[in-house]
Amino acid sequence: MAGQEQIKPGRRDDGPDDTPEPAAAPAAQTADTDIDDILDEIDGVLETNAEEFVRGFVQKGGQ
Amino acid sequence: MERPVRDFLAPMSVRRVMGIETEYGISVPGQPGANPMVLSGDVVTTYAASRGIRPAQASWDYADEAPLRDARGFDMGRGAAHPSQLTDVEDPTMANVVLTNGARLYVDHAHPEYSSPEVTTPRDAVVWDKAGELVMREAVRRLATVPPGVNLYKNNTDGKGQSYGTHENYLMSRRTPFARIISQLTPFFVVRQVMCGSGRVGIGVDSRTPGYQLTQRSDFFETEVGLETTLKRPIINTRDEPHAVADLYRRLHVILGDANHCDVANLLKMGSTSLVLAMIEDDAFTTDLSVRSPVRTLQAVSHDPTLKSTIELMDGRSIRPVELLRTFHELASAFVERKWGNDVDEPTVEVLGWWDTVLTALEGDPMDARRWVDWVAKLSVLEGYRSRDSLGWGDPRLKAVDIQWSDVRADRGLAHRLAATGRLEVLVHEEEAARAMDEAPEDTRAWFRGACLRRFPDAVVAASWDSVVVEVPGERALQRIPIMEPLRGTKDAVGDLIDGAPDIRSLLESLAAADRGSD
Image (tube, rainbow over all chains, first blue to last red; front, top):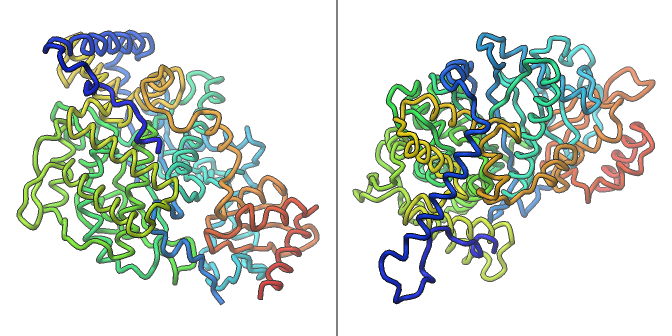
C-alpha cells in the first residue's frame, strides 16, 4: 500500500478552512528555499565549463 | 512432456518474467574523439576482473541451435557446444561476460550494456536495474585510477542526433495474437511517457529547437511497428527471440522507454506495462482506445510538459494524455479486482497505488510529481536555473545539467545528489542494490545461471539466457545445460542440488538424476 501512504507535496487540502488566500505563501517560500538549496548544491558539482562539456559529449548511435 | 508453469501463462497481475537492458553513454573527459568501442571493452573487462571473472571464462554462449525439447529445463544432451565455437574474448571490443547475479555485461555497438537477470516483479526489476548502475559506477571508479578515466551516463541521447536504448523485456504467452498486442499496447505506449519519461533539454533528434520535453527517446521513433532497433525505430518492436520454449512464450522487446533514476517511475514503467499486457493476454479490453497518428502523437505528447494539450482517439474523442492514463488505470484496477477480489498480490497493490498517486499529482500541478517522475524532477531543477540566472533553453548550462543528471557517480550525478538529500522517493536502497550486484534473483532461472558461476567459476566456460556451458575435467566435449523454462532453475528447485554438489561432475549427475526422477 506504499503508494497510498505517500505525502503529496504541495497539496494543502488539510489546511484550516478560515485561512485567507495568502496562506499559500509559506509553501511557496519553502519550495523556493528548497530549490535555492538544490541549485547551490548542484553549482558545487556541475561541470565548470558547461559549453565544452556539452560539446564533448558525443555518442555513437546504439539500439 | 512440456510442463509450463501455470501461474506464468495467466499471470493476471503485474507478476511475470521481465528485465531491463541498458546501454550507457560513455565519454572520456576532454577527449571527445576517444574510441567508444575500446572504452566500452575496458569498462566490461575492468569490472569483470574486479569480480574475479577472467575474460576467457564465463563468456556468452552464442550457440543458437538451442534444443527446444526439455522437460525440466535441464537436458543432459552432450557436446552441443565445442570450444572452437565459443567466442574468443581477446578482442576487448567483444568483451562479454555473465555475472554471478545472472546479468550479462558486454559491449553493444559503441556502448557498455548491462542486461539485468530475469525477475518476476516490477520492484525486483528496479533492484537489478540499480545494481547495473552500481556495476557501471564500480567500473568508473576503477578506471579513474588512470586519468582522465572514463565517465558513464545512464541516459539515452547525446542531444546531437544519436540515441541508445534502455529496453524492457516481458515474457508473454505465445497464444496471444500479436495483432492484438500491437493495437492495444500502442495507445498505452503513446501516453506512458507522461509517468515514466526522463526529460530532455532540446526538441528534435539533434535538439535543433530549444525547449524541454518529457523524454529522451520519443523523437527517435519513426514508425508504428517493425523489427529495427537502430534505424526507423518502431513503437512496437517485433523482434521475436524468446530465449525460452518458443512454442509457449514470446519475449516482448520494448524499445521506446527511457532509462530511469526515479524508482517510482521505473516501477511504474515495468508494472503498468506488465498489467496492461496481462489485460491484453486475457482479452479484457472491451473498448478501443486507439490513438490517431501514434508516432506524431507520441512526439506531441513528449513536447508538452504542461500536459494540457489533448490527443485524438480514433473514436473521435479529444482527451488529455493523463486522462487516457487514468482510463488505463481504472480498467486495470477493475481487471485486478475482477480476477482477485480482495486477494491481490502485494506487487500489484504497490503498482496500482503508485500509479494512482502519480496520476493524481500529474492531473493537478505536474510539478507535484517531482519526487517520483524523472522528467518532473529534472524540470524543477532546470526551471530553478532559468529563473535564478535568467537562462534561455538554449543555454549550455541547462544542457550540461541534462547530461550530468545521469552521471553514474554518486558525487557527480545530479539525480544521485537529489536522491541522497531526500528529494527523490527511494524504493530500493543502495545496500539492497549493492547486494544485487553479486546475488541473483531467487525465483527465476537467473538463480541457476548465477549459482553455477558462483559455485563452479572454473568449470563454466560460457552461458546465455537459455544455457550454461560447462567443462568437466577429463571430458573432451563441453556440456551444454539448456535452461529453456525461465521459471525453473530457482533457488527452491535447485538450491540444494547446487550447494550439495562438491564439483561440476556431481552437479551434472544430480541434475540428470533429478530429471530422470521426474519423468
